[in-house]
Each structure stands twice: as structure tokens, then as C-alpha cells.
Length: 268
Length: 238
Image: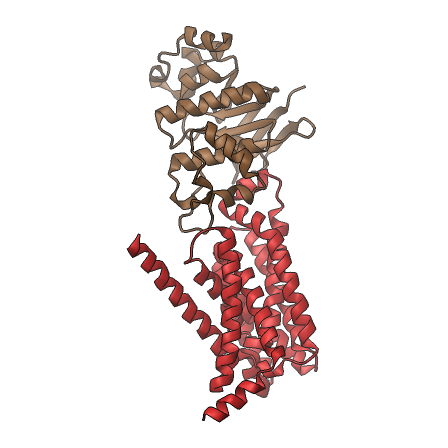
């Protein structure tokens, strides 16, 4: 048993760890703004849009990443438009359109690939995915760092931000496009169903630390990277699916942080 | 050349005219007070001028005008991972200039920047908003009831500081106020608004019993108490 576990750990190569670290950290950092925007459910639902895209890409022997990305961008533009025209009950529309695309995705995804598309398979990440993932994660990190200030300001007061001539629509679109990139990157890693969780949970966990914006947003990035890497180890150790292991690790950290917050309140 | 010139401004929402027929201007270093009953469209007027609401008519700004804005209410989100220092930082305001203004407004800056925004009282947050609006050296500042949530002494301090800053920095102020004493004391011009422009000019000439009655209705005598010419003149002469 012990030897079997050790062999499995050996199979987790350094590339996998690096991929997990970059995707997890970028997702967590990016998610910090999404949780403040109260768009958690949008982020989660959005990850379902990737499925029909991946399915079509697989049917035509293309990289599923491309298919997922194209469909996500389409979904993002839809959310962005809806967010601008606030008269629509955005949550209802998001719920309907995105679950519909999940259903369509399930219909057209070739059966053998369905589980992999839904829940990801870290072994399916090829050598050529590696540089794409690293570069995209870095781009996401640096763009987020640039735009997090105006985005947070517009969350506090949309009117004030507009009076300061901050182009909120532009920042929101840029932000949502990055969500598309991170979800597309993550679908192979932990799957389309669970990728939304890797964006949301680290930020929700970091919110319990309190303090400044930097502590919170970098904290979310660190928690994302940590859950992701430890999830991969746990998945290797016990032979369980990587997506489930990563998300459950993140949930575990969230619970720890929540307890920490409660403890702090009791002491104070 | 005025900093801001309004011609025939009109705001229509869902087919109803909220405000209409507005013509006025604001000069450099001038204070214009907007008065009117609740629901008269004062905040709507601000939002239309600031481009936050669709409107018709002309809103003409002088070239390169920098605008400060203190809204009537910013819902302070508790449980938000943002310190007071962050709040200035996300607006690209240096803590040094923010600190000077906060000090003037009567907030000690020793610990304030690291404190979470959520623990501020309504009055303190209002002062933080005022400091944010002034930090960028605006040419004109819009105050929508700037002293809401501030106690009486705090209110006096805020107006005193604003006047002092205005004397040195020469910015213009447009101010919505319920308090006619404030209008007499600090405003160069007053605009009476109740969906339409009912008066516009010098407060002493325009805030007549007759105009106030037209503006507020029958019981307007209540609003027209103790404005005291001497007080107004004293301020203008100092």
C-alpha cells in the first residue's frame, strides 16, 4: 500500500506541480475581484459554458482549450451585455442560459470524453499545454493587478467611478475575458464543472482574514495555489480524481479560515 | 467664462419629466446652492450634469475642468476587505494629501489608514468621501448634502474647512442643502428647484417669503427663520 502510494507520487512530475501552482494561484487571485463583485454564481455558471465548446473541439480533433475558450468568450460577452443593461434579472438569465449550454454540452460530448471534460484529467495535459498555461497565468496575474483598483472602486460606487472618467465597461469586459481564459485553462486540469470553484473558493476563504485589499487578493492567490498543489498531491497519493481533490482541499482551507475568523471574533 | 454652463436642461425618465427648463451657470470660486423640497429632483440634477443620467439640453464645461463629487449616500459595505488607506489608493490618491485633508476635517490620521473601511461611522465615512473629492485639486466640487450623517458641530467644521480651502484653492462649489442658514451663510447664488427652476440669483434677493412659499408650499414660513442679514454680511466682509 505504502509502496503503491509512493509510486503514484513519483508519477506526479514537476510539470504537473508547476501547472497546478500557476493555474491555482491565477484563479484565486482573479477570483478575489469576482467575490467582491458578488458574481460568484456567474463565475460558477460560466464554467459550464466551456463544455459544448470542448465537445465540439474534441469531435473535430482540435485542442479542447480552443473550443472552450471560444464558447467562454461568447458567454462572457453575453454576461457583459446583460450586466450593462441592468433592467434584466441577470441571475435568472445566467442560470438558464448556462445550464442550457451544460445540457447541450452533455448531449454532444462523445461519451468516453464526457467524464474527462466534466471533471478534468491532469494526465491529459500535454507538453505543449505547459507553456500556454504558464504564459496565460502570468498575463492574468499582471492584468488583474493593473485593473483591480478601478474595479474595486466601481464596486464601492459606480457613480463616483464614472465621474472620475473611469471606463468601467472596458475594465469589466477585460476582467470577464480573463475569467474566460482561466476557466479554459482549468478545464483540462480540474474540469469544466469544478473550475468555477477554484476561482471562487480561495477568495471566499481569504475574505475571512480581513485586513487590506493586498492581503486579501494575494491571500486568495496563495490559497488558490496551495489548494491546487496539495490537491494534486492528494489525488496522486490516494488515486482520486485531481479536480475533486483540488476543490475539496480549497473547501477545507475555507473552513479553516472561517474558524480562524470566528476565533478572532471571540478573542476580540 | 463660466466653469459650467447649463442651458435648457431636461431629464425625462419613463416618459415623465423629472426636471426641466433649467438655465444657470457656475463661475470660478463661486458657491451655488440648490434648494428645494424632497423629491424636487436635486440629486437628479446633479446626476444629469455629471453625465450619470441621460438628459437633453446643454451641459457645457470649461476646457480641462476637474470635477469632484460627494454623493448623498454611498452604501458602506461592511465586511469588505478594504482599509481606509486602500480606499484612497484605489483612487490613486496619495496618503499624504489624503492625510492633510482628513486632519483638517477633524479625523486623526495615526491609525485611520490601516483601519478597515467598514468600521467607520457614517460621519467619518462622509469625511473620507469629502477628502477624496478634494484631493485631486478639482476646479468644481458637487456636494449632495455633504453633512448628512454628521453632527451639528461636525457640520459647522466641514463648512468652515470648505470655505477656507475654497479661499486658497479657488474651486467652485455646487451644493445641495436642506438648511437655508447654510445657504445664506455660504452661497453666492441660490437656485430654487421643484421640478422646474423657480428662482435663481443672490440668496438675499431670491429667498423671499413669496419664492419660498412657491417652492415649499404653504407652511414655508417654517423654513424662513433667522437668516439674519447681519450674519450673511459678516461672512462676506471677512
